[in-house]
Length: 171
Length: 324
Image 1 (cartoon, rainbow over the protein chains, first blue to last red):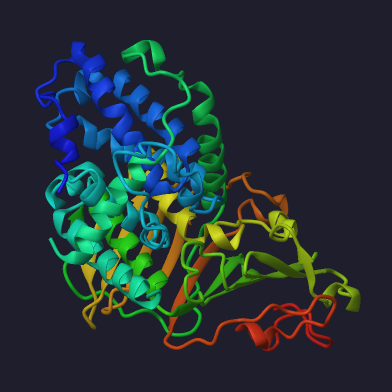
Image 2: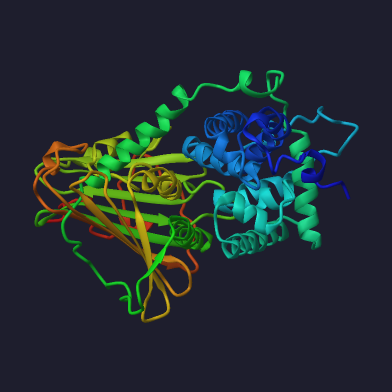
């Protein structure tokens, strides 16, 4: 079991002051970019989305920087921005994966699983990626997406049922 | 964590590591941040267009068919986030069903100006794009009459279109690279512009418009145990818009109504349909429990609307006429 991404990459920026935005940016831009790519299925859109969200975070850093988890806010803002752009594009993240990247560190993912995640609706994918890629708790995912925790749990439950059905069908 | 969850988690992590790095090195902080200017343009234009479309509607909703279960409980104020989550989950339930149909009616003054049908029945493995297995029809009644049916099957679009006066040549299927652009001239399109936007247009609308229009939301139980979500907002000081979202006790969306009150407007895609006339809209949804998948229509053959879940008298058939 690998260590939690949050633990590995999340510094103690929860009590961040506005002047440490640079620290927050360096720590969270890449994991959120990758999360958005997995959620929306497009690396280029994710790239723009995270920059857009980070720019908005900077613009409001005096307020956002005092949030308990500003990275959750950036994830949500990035998703909201990306879904406007993403409306007319298909989920094609598998074709954008690079088999040669990190070859010694990890096996290439099971394409069936990633494609099954891609078949979920964006609201469900956003919860799944937050929970299983960013390794946030459902409470943290709910906070990030600004939805009630019960909604996050029901979306996660629904997503898992659909993933189970899809993956069973493809066995 | 279950085995399924472990499997999803490990593969998402593997996928995340195999994503390409950012094209540029990541210097820290502000120097790398992009300007906001260009990014806002697309979303804002889309939002403004949708807002213009929506505020052009108004008047009293004219219900067709069965009215949704009436609300009986007390009206409870909710946050916009709760409202959005409730409605989006109801949408999600629709899209998780084996299929569903939707009918939309828009009315100006005393006459219907547009009917839209949507028939969604994804095949196995096709849920990633709501365009799959969608049948989409729209009819505009009035002085000029335009209509179209779009079918998307396996990534290919098939379109039959009608422009008054109808001719037999207009009523055959043709295969296209894109959804029928003809739809772009139909007034007051919200969900009707492109079938694959059906879900995301709503999702996007929530996050973009309501926040800016001083929206307030409420929730009310219905007699059968469902929920009616209501949002009221003011796109301008003299205009009030009220939308109701009726959620079936099973959790899926069953109706969406739209009402607008306010002064005369001169906004809209088609100027013939804006002004002082009252206008309304309503969409009804019905689940399909075991829908047979659609098959692609054969190009250059006559249209048979009934094959695609559309009303048998859907205009385009010889001898049929637009709705009065």
